[in-house]
Amino acid sequence: SKPGLYHHWPNKEALLLSIVGITGALLLRQLEDVKAATADPEQRMRLFMRGRIAVVARHQDLFTVTWQERAILGSGSYSRLAATAERYRDSVRSLIDDAKEAGLIRPEVDTHLLMLAIDGMTGCAYFWYREQGALRPAEIGDAFRDMLLGGVADPGLPGPDIAAN
Image (tube, rainbow, N blue to C red; front, side, top):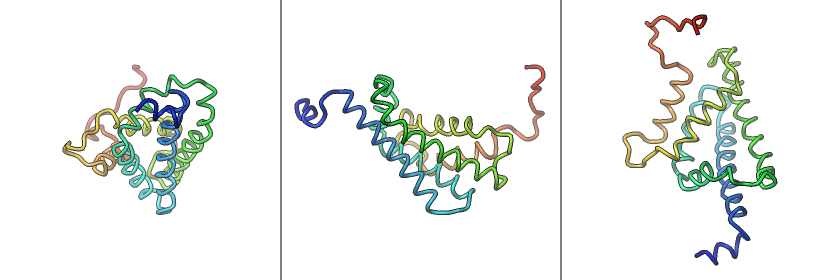
């Protein structure tokens, strides 16, 4: 009930701050579990992509609220979450850099942009993932990982003419 909620949280922003904090903690824990599970960069990328999709799918309700409502948080409230968010982003960038050093990702690929691409690909699953769909989170994670690391262009096609753009 509304009075029950406000017994635990003084206002809507405090409740939203808790939800955003929980989703951040879920993602950080998943990433830390991946890093603890193996030192192999290829396996880490696979586990990370699978796990991130699984976390978002498992907690779709929390991620829906987080992604759709976090913009209304005041800067003071959001600054409390910034340290966790930056720790998470640093850890994902480290995971990507490890994959680069292992030769899985081309050295010229911008680590930060790839981190943002992964965040967008997997984070938006809150919106489109359906449990009754054809693919499970692990299969989606594997497909996204394969697309990122293997590319999606037909190798028989000529490359884009960058000079023309």
